[in-house]
Image 1 (cartoon, one colour):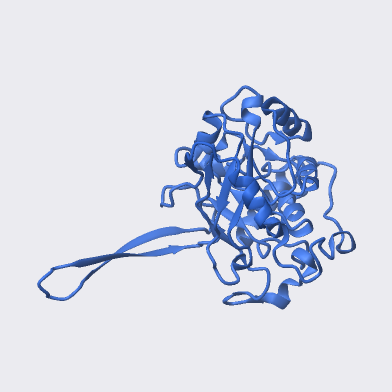
Image 2 (tube, helix red, strand yellow; image 1 turned 30 degrees about the horizontal axis):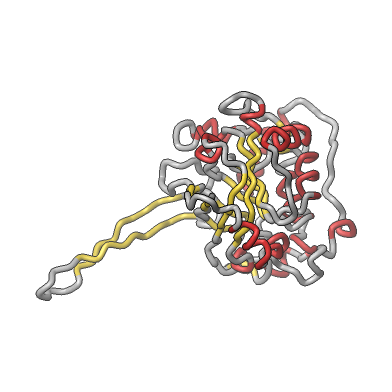
Length: 314
């Protein structure tokens, strides 16, 4: 990640100068979290029986739609990230019922590949994580002692698809298109849907159409929400915000002096989890804008995130 950040910084130096328009909230502005000074779950605290029952009332047909991409070597991977599978085969003795056991060794950065949920140990503002936890006080060689993805737990809530690509009348938004507050609000009005606290908000840009087909383009740029739209979404108090691109936010940011500000705003300042690389094409094609969503992160002790295979049920 350090090498990747350095590359992006060098790219920024060669870009046209732009006035810096955003700085991260100060520690005094963001801490303690509204969930309490000792909290480690942030927006996952919305997970309660009332939200589960509210989501289940949306299930009318029993149709299940998978929102996770297949994990394989053909998927887009950021520099230094890796996914490799090695098959293992074991013969289970010479008994009267000959049997072979098949296994696999998976070599990967399991928390940050494929369709994945970002945890609070993933990003900082300076040397501070969510709830102003100091990075060097919780980082160890075997994971983080606080804010690990294992603290999130299973998430069940009302999911809302905001189809910005459909609003604009295109299959895929343009490269580096910054989704505005107005775009989100217009799409919601068009879909006759309102956001509620505790929702999982998924934004369709159409960028997922490039997955496994045009990987270099998928990673080079992407449309997504900007800082203003992210601030507006944070005020809606969601359980998570996701998209069909790799960072959820627009990349590169129009202000080349800042890098991945929405990660800082959501994860660090507001304690809102990000769902990246969601497979949203089927929901968009069927115009399913409201559904029950289930996301179950792997319990990677002290992990920065988790590969997930979310499902939508309607």
